[in-house]
Image (cartoon, rainbow, N blue to C red; front, side, top):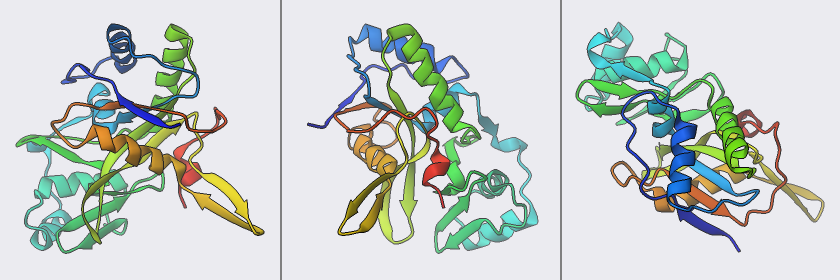
Amino acid sequence: MITIEALHNFPKIEKKCNLSAKIIRTIKNENFILHNNDVLCIASKLISKSEGLFVDLNSINPSQLALRLHQQIPRKDPRLIQIIIDQTEDKSGKKLKISKNFIGGWLPNGLFLTGAGVDKLDANTAIVLPRNCDEIAKKISEDIFNQLKVRVAIIITDSDGRIDKKGATQVVVGLYGVPGLRKSRYEDKTHVETICDMLAASAGLLMGQKGKMLPIVKIRGIDYVFDKSATIRDAVN
């Protein structure tokens, strides 16, 4: 049986901090039971804030490309568009996808995300995704093992929209322990599923969107072999 449970009363993160320590402390305080091979899904905003990846929008000078794209997408702050361009590490804009009011970008690790993982926190502040989400996921898993003696997989999730659908879902931007793909065979055909995104979307049922404050979700009952070498690149074209 697969169960999904959120970690309640997690403290609000406003500045760079030791996220592993806060997670472990809250797990202990809430008597949140972990078993080997549980999967902890963690919202990327927690990761970004704990890494101190805040961007002062007043310090951003939009390029001519960002200003032109703003004409296509007036609702999008040109400073945010510039940060999105910067996140793709391609100043030409060739790693962006523009459609109506939608802007997305391919990140250096091969992932495609709405807004390239850039979020606006308030009128003058944004946050960006870390470059090394897989390494951060590994550190959190190892810290939990060292303190609680339980081996859990970590999935870092991000809210993502699609051009063809309204609303958003949760996808994976970093992982450790759990494979990104699940393969099976039927009638001599190999079928491949992006199991990591399935888990992220399942966690999203409880996480919700901004303001719900359930940024950490435990999934139990998934049949998988713990893989210390698993990374998000395994699931990216």
